[in-house]
Image 1 (cartoon, rainbow over the protein chains, first blue to last red):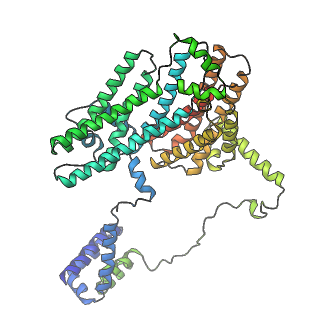
Image 2: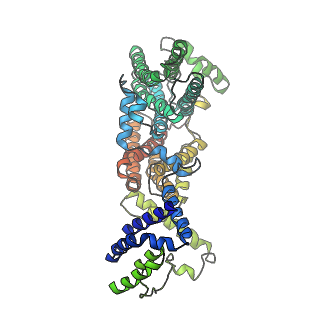
Image 3: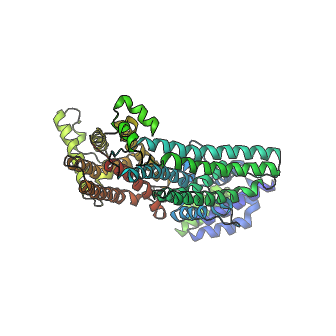
Length: 305
Length: 234
């Protein structure tokens, strides 16, 4: 009996505070304090008010945000809730591995975004295609049999490769870590989106690398490639090391090696496929008939190059 | 007012607390009266006759005028609401189809090495515009989906003009001067497109995310400019 009375009484005070426009309201609350138990004890219709009050309370409590469902727009909007400076900060810390700052804990802070991964992958795919076309142009510029071709299919290939890497590898990694978490309890795990976020931002360094690969000096290209792989590989390692530290040595070593190996494989694969060094000018005899071949011989030309 | 309150105060002593409060806030002396009018969208004279009965020529000319007006707004981008308020997708469709048609007929050694096919250009323009619109809406933009598509589509107009100029220039002999002219024209039109669409779209974004919303637009027009610049005829 005391509890609903206290509820209604407090509700009344709160309501008066909210509606306090007339001085009469304050007078009423003091009056109710004097006559509180009298007025409340009289009415058995309290139950209606009790229900009203409880409804209001539940409404007030339910007004706190329930997490939105997967198919609503606001669910997806929560992954794009970043400002410009936050995106720039995340990009910066993906470029510079700092031993004491975990990328996920320091930068993401349980607030992963999908803007960075998506647009970094898109930029990288188009940059790869454009650079690859330009490097083919630069290499064959001085050759007599040169005819320019836009090679637009490379956009498709680059796009598929980059997006597969940026989504399938984190998915596999997350699945593997979840499994290890079930096997050994002290192994931690990031959420799927945090993993995707880390991988997406770690691909950023390849954008300037790909542009720098236009320089036709082979040694310099490999140097830039190694630099990029080591920087972003270090960021990945430092991010995932705290999770697998408590796992068995074999498993953690294998996992980290595979991560860095896949990262390096992406770089090497892109370098070899998109930045092929064309056959040099020292064999013009074999080149000329190949370029003069028409459609029936086109399969020969593509096989030879 | 005070007397009315005292009366109601007396009543609250007998009634329950919560209901009595409602008596305090609304005095019973003042009657509530007035008119309830639902604000309707402005009925123009269209209400009197439906546009179904007018001759087809009038409909087409009216739509063409609307499209033409929007073209003018794109070429001289000022902050006007005409592009946003009365959006339509005819202009973008015409521009996209003409750009894709003009990008056809490029040569290559082998079929895969060529420029973009008609379907590729079409998909890039429309899919790119949809993705950019979704991106700006997810970032918290206040513009509607079709308005944004409309603006992005209409701002392809400078690049279509650039394509036309490139095709005309390519009728002359190839050479570095030829390429330089095309490069300058494409760069100028690319800047014009990006600035025009940014002028329309940037205001609808929250202020600390403008750069995040503008960058994809830049990338979109860059890709289209690249396709135009790398076009080589037979």
